[in-house]
Image (cartoon, rainbow, N blue to C red):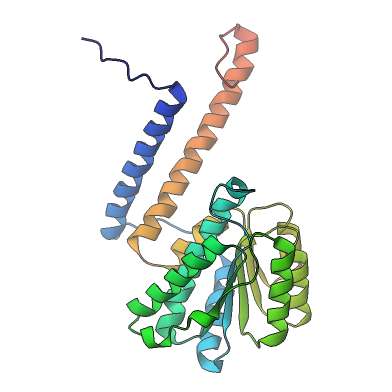
Length: 271
C-alpha cells in the first residue's frame, strides 16, 4: 500500500533527511568519544600560541582579549554570510573562558553585535560558575564596542589597545577588511595576536600581521582542540563526515557531467 503524499517539496524532504543524518552521526560520534575512541588530529600551531598566552596571563595578571568580531548570528544584513564564523568564534571564546576561569587568567571580551554580546555574557558567567569562581566574574569585562559596524568596531578595539595593557588578543570569528586596522595596531604595539576567519578579505591581512592564524576550516576545528568534552569532539567528527560527503558528491557530479556529454545521459538537476 503506497504511503500518502506529505505534500512537501523535494528540497524540504532532502533537508529533513540531511538533518536526520547529521543528528544520527553526532550521536554516534558522541558515543565513540565517551568510549575513548578519539580521531587523529594534525597539530594547529596557532593554538599553541593561545595556550602559552593563557599561561602567561595567569602569571602576569594581564588580560587576554577575546573577540568573535562584528558579525551577527542572525539572518539580518549579511547574517547568513557571517553567522557560521561568529558562532565558531563564540565556541572558541567559551573554551578560552573555561581555561581562563580555571587557571586564574583574566579575560576581556569585546564584540560588535548586540546578540553576540548577550551570548558572551552568558558564556563567561557559565565558565566562572562551573570553575567555582563566580565571585571573579565581572560583567564590565564584556564590552559591546559597536553594533554591526565593522569600522566602528575596529576603532573601538584600537582604542582598547591604547587603554589596556593586554597579554594577548584572540580575534577569531567574523572579520573583514577592518582587520587591517586592528591587526596593524596590535602589531605596532607588539601585542601577541591569534586570529582566524574564513573570509578571503581578512585572511591575507591576518596572515601577514599576526603571530598565528587559523585558516578556513581550522576555525571550526579549534573548539575541539581546546576542549576534551565529548560534545566538541563529536561536532568535529561530524563536520569531517559532512565535508567528506560533499567532496564525494562534487567528484561524482563532475564525472557524471563529463559522461553525460559522451554517452548522452539525462541531465541531473543542478548539473
